[in-house]
Amino acid sequence: YVNEVIQPNQTTTTFTPNNISNNDVVKASVTSSLSCSTSPMATSAPIAMKVLATVNAALSITTNKDSICALQEASIASMPVNAGSNYSINWFVNDSPISSLSEVLTLSTLTQTSEIYAKLNTSYPCTTQSEIFSNKLTIEILPKPTLSLDIIGEKEVCEGDLKKQYSSEGSNAEVYNWIIPKFANGISQTKTIELSFTNKGTDTLGVYATNR
Image (tube, rainbow, N blue to C red):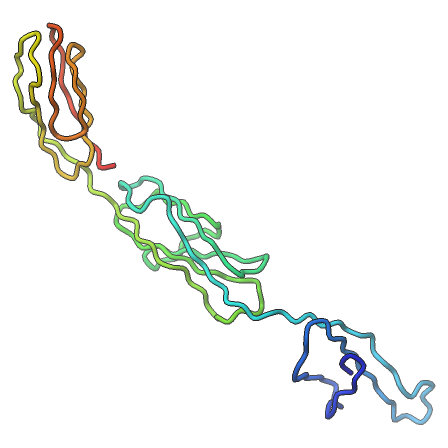
């Protein structure tokens, strides 16, 4: 029976419905062939069917940094859709599985440019896909910056000299951080700086570079 309606051609111990809707009530009855049965017909307890919608599950990932220096930390967050209440995530770096089931993957061991993606193991039983993979992200490992040993410019200047130019050549460097003498004024984040000397004295001019 479905909603108290007898189902035709369903007379075996297994019921295979053709069209069941959510909250339909299914029950069965049996008629005994024994002549001495005290109750020739018995009816089962009803079952209210829960029919779930078929959905498209999906997984996307994002990162807070798409380029880092070697061994720096980067985090990759997963965003599942229609995954159910008890899903899990498998992570892959350069097609090799990572022993982490967390929704957020934190990496601090990368030494080369790497491709990261994830697989969603959904707990929802009615998805259209058999396997669900995320988009792929590439995290670039930046080369270390280098500088020449020499800073090019005058080593002896006069008090009051303005806009004296100094430079240092580097490779793979994005930002130059200048350490200026205490009696000079100037600011720059490029390989060249102009200094004005307001007082006399002896001090050190230095520079270091980063690629971030």
